[in-house]
Image (cartoon, rainbow, N blue to C red; front, side, top):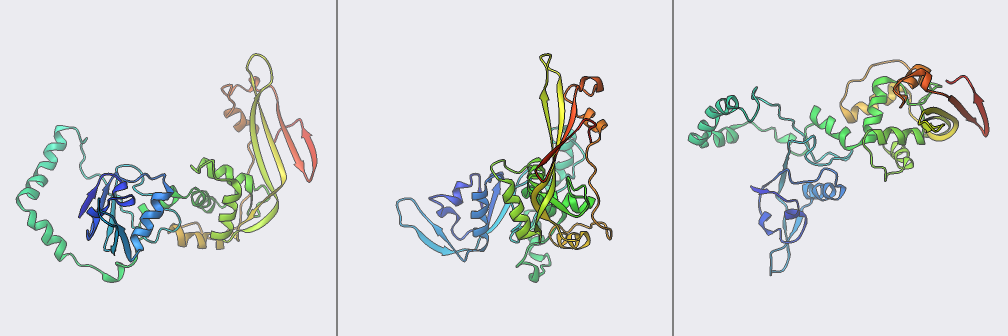
Amino acid sequence: MLEIMDSDQITKSFNADMFAKTFILGEESWFVGSKQQAQILKDLCTARQWPYEQKYRAAFRGKNVHRIIATTNEAQAVRIDYDDRRWTVIEVEKVCPYPSTSAESWNWWTPYYDFVRDNAGAILRHLLEYPVDRSLIGRPHHTKAKAEDKKSSDPLLAVLDHIAQTGVCPDDERGDGRISTATLGRECYAAGASRQTSSRTFANEARKRFRAATAINCIHWKVEQVSRDGDGTHSVYAMKRTDMPGIKLPPLDQFRAFLAEITQEVYPEGGSWGVFEASTLETVRKADPNGGDADAVEEQVRYIKDKGSVVKDDIPF
C-alpha cells in the first residue's frame, strides 16, 4: 500500500513510488471541486496500463494493478459525476459517543488501540478469512452514501430528484411537466452549480441523460429587489414570462421510475404533474429585505410578457 498526501504524486511527474502498489490511499488528498482530478482518477481505475516516471530515468508504462481508496472527514472525498460506475462510497458512522478531544474519548478507544498493538495478526487473519463475493468485485456497490454523493456532485440530478419527490416542476403553473431553461439554471445554481456553466448546458444535459424533450412557451418567474426612493426602502418586483424555451419531462410515473434507477431512491407512486403555486403576497413580504414590514413594501408589481405583449397588473400575483 502507498499512502499519498498530495494528489500530484499520482497525477504529475516522478510517480514511480506507486509502481506495483495494489492499494493507493489518499487521505484528504484530492480536491473535490476539480473535474480534472476526477477524470484522471476515473482513468486510473480502468486503464490497463499506467505511465510511471523516475527522476533522471526514462519514463515507462507498467501494468495497472492499483485500487484507489480516498478518505476524508468532509462531505466528499472525490468528485463523482453521473458516470460513477467506478466508485463505491461508504459513510462511516461515528461510534464513539464522546467528543474526540475529551478524556472520555481517550478511555473509550484505549482498549481498541491496545488490542491492535498486541494482536496485529488478528486483523490480518480477519481480512484473509472474510468471505468475498467475487461477482461483485467488477462493479461498485450502490449505497445510500453514494446516492447522496452523486447528488452533491451533480446539481442537475439534485434538482430533478427534488422534482421527483414533490411531483412539481419549478414555475410550472400549468402542471404539464415543462421547465424553462432559465428556471432550470436558477435551480441548479441554487443547488451549487458553477456560474460558469450556462443554463443551456443544464437543459442539454437533461435531454441527453434524463429523457427530456425540447419545449416552448415555458413559464419563468424572476423576483427582483430594487430601491425606489432616497431613504433606502426596497420594492419587490416579480416578473413572469410565458414564452420561454425549455424542456418537457416525461409523464411523472415514467420520470420517477427512470430516475429511481439512477438515485436508488423510493419515490411516491401514481399521480400526475402538480401545479406550481407562485409566491403569494404574504411570502413576498416574508422575503422582503426591509424586514417583513408590509407597509415598507411600497410597490409590488407583476409584469407578464405573453407572446410579446406586456401586461401590468397593479394587484400582484
